[in-house]
Image 1 (cartoon, rainbow, N blue to C red):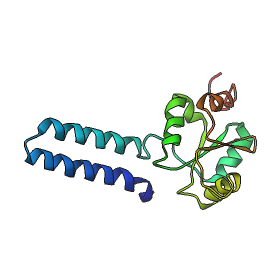
Image 2 (image 1 turned 30 degrees about the horizontal axis):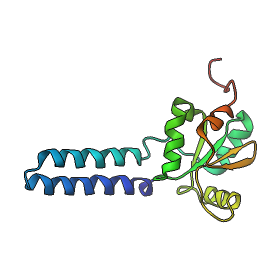
Image 3 (image 1 turned 45 degrees about the vertical axis):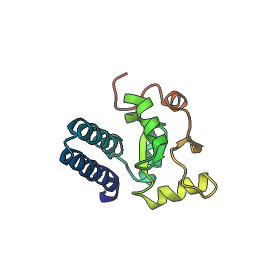
Image 4 (image 1 turned 135 degrees about the vertical axis):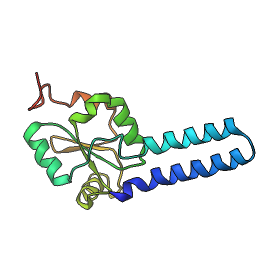
Length: 150
């Protein structure tokens, strides 16, 4: 879990250092702008924006049971972030698997992408799709997810 927080922590520390230098030069507006930009980048790259990751085996098992796609992703990936943001609330219906937390997940992604860890890789009915359009992913969601109101 700590690995997922390294980039956000570095961004906060870097932003704080740059802001401190700007404050010492009495550039308060510039300091505030840098700090806000780095805090935003840290938030966007933090594990907080993505639904909780599960293991690859568990995701596949759940997908077979409920028909929902599995999304293999990694923190810091701008394409994963684009998918997550563009899906909005629908993103919670997918099974998210971080390839940094699960070596089996990383191996699955490499197998689907000619040895590359290209993410997001979305698996629908056992078929991997690399960096699909968010609207296409939304269309792959079942009309009724078990355990939710119709």
